Amino acid sequence: MIILGIETSCDETAVSVVEASGRPNNTDSDPIFFKVLGQALYSQVKIHAEYGGVFPALAKREHAKNLSPLLEKVLEEAPVEKIKKNANFDQEKIKKILERETGLADDLLALVSRIDPPAIDAIAVTAGPGLEPALWVGINFALALGEVWHIPVYPTNHMAGHLFSPLISGGSFQFPVIALLISGGHTELVLAKNWHEHQVIGQTRDDAVGEAFDKVARLLGLPYPGGPAISLLAQEARNANVTAEFSLPRPMLNSGDFAFSFSGLKTAVLYLLKKFDDVNDDVRHQVAREFEDAVTDVLITKTQAALRAYNPKTLVIAGGVSANTHLRAAFTNLAKKYPDLTLLIPPAALSTDNAVMITAAAYIDLLAGRKPATIIHAQGNMTL
Ligand code: KG4
Ligand code: ZN
Image 1 (cartoon, rainbow, N blue to C red):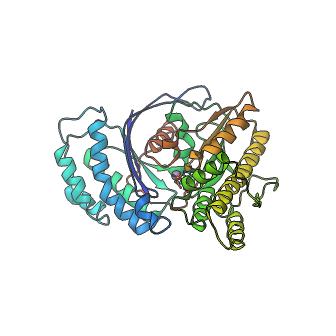
Image 2: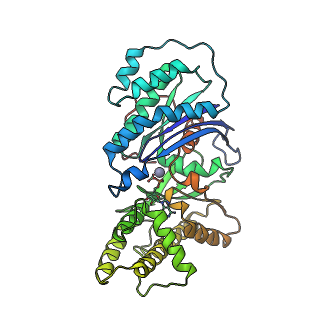
Image 3: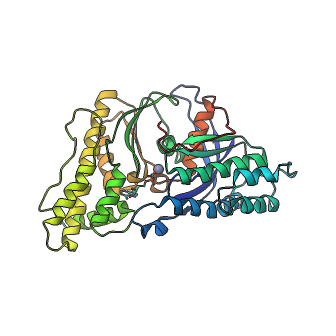
């Protein structure tokens, strides 16, 4: 089946068209396949960088501005058949659905008058977790589009998208699966017993790991988002054999559970920096390296504990922070110690937010018998 994906939970506006096939039937052996037919993504990071983080009202406005052009671009490139006869729809209803999204009703009505409806079977839209003002734009756009083209709309969980993201690049799951989901808003270890039963076995008590990267970057005077900036400095420090003259804490390393905490690490960096009269380039390199090492130690140790406790066949590392090269290398090394374990880390473009992973999560929901919705609420705190 062909699924259109829409993602607006944070600061990326993304649209995709994906062909999904395969029937797992709750067994570990039945694979699922995804073929990306088209995708387009507009990142707002440059716009938010000025504010040092994502500014929700601005994110909402940018999503509304970009959704319709992105959809047009995706439909132009995706080899999807067009249905020649445009079915009837109620223009006033579309305007009503999109009344709060500035300019979007006009954009969408203009677009659908220009193009023939595509033969798409389902629309998948992120309903949470994320920033609610941002989520609403995608939800209302999806509902309006479903109304125009008479396509069912499926509310989808963004974290399930991250969980299933490695499937898109050809990975396959052997259950049980342990997943470490690390992003700007989440840090959680998930146990998936089969395609449809997922349980969060541990999560952060305060800041997410991506948030810690972003906050520490800010302390170091680096631009938002902080992950790539810190990663670059840390890499330079390693290449030049620059080691830190101090050490940072590894929070909850030996807590004996799967919980995380990263706010103390950020505070430790804050106090550490106060000790330096001059936070120069050398200090920044040392902090970046030591911070990345501290985060890596914690994530590796906790994941290893989960491997011991659940003996999974597949380990997934996903979410924006899994784009980090040092972390990827550390997990690759860890996995070598477990010959029966398959490690799946999506390529960087699928690690960070995208709309392809949303179609994957929706397809798996659909296989479980999930019904489409005509009313969808944004759920900022939606859990897996
Ligand atoms: O999954 P994502 O794109 O959005 C959320 O759902 O939050 O993750 C964004 C987070 C940001 O905190 C960003 O700093 C972090 O992922 N990130 C990285 C790297 N690339 C992105 N963190 C560490 N190293 C990276 N290379
Ligand atoms: Zn995300």
